[in-house]
Image (cartoon, rainbow, N blue to C red; front, side, top):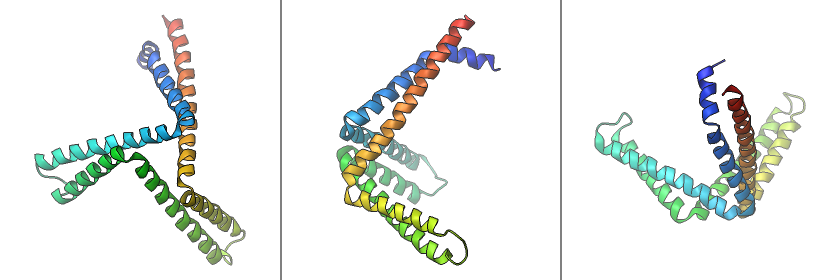
Length: 184
């Protein structure tokens, strides 16, 4: 048993509780206000991209780069451009990401169907691959036809994950708090 680690968690159990409450709050927000949650998520990615772009620009100006100045400049510009777009037009960025996901799924679904046809003489039950391809193709088509509905669905899944995360963190925080009372 790692006594210093346990003592650290026992003293700071409330940090886990705060993480859990933030997770629960964000999860609830995803269900109550999905559009605002999408904007918050895209803004978070945009801010991270702006920070990456700024740090890359500083690295570009500070001396030689292992990747080469051209690649670093391209990365800095792409990060800054994406970050700015994400902050100014978050729903457009979210729609574009859903459309790209839809296109990727359609291509993957079609390829799985073709692969199943090619494998039909080599393996039994190749129709499992064809069925998975049709399901992926259908999901991709739905994303392309209804990107905003798909966006809400994605936000709800993220919200569900945040709720589960939050509940687990609160549960652990309360258990650690009880542990800290027993040890003191």
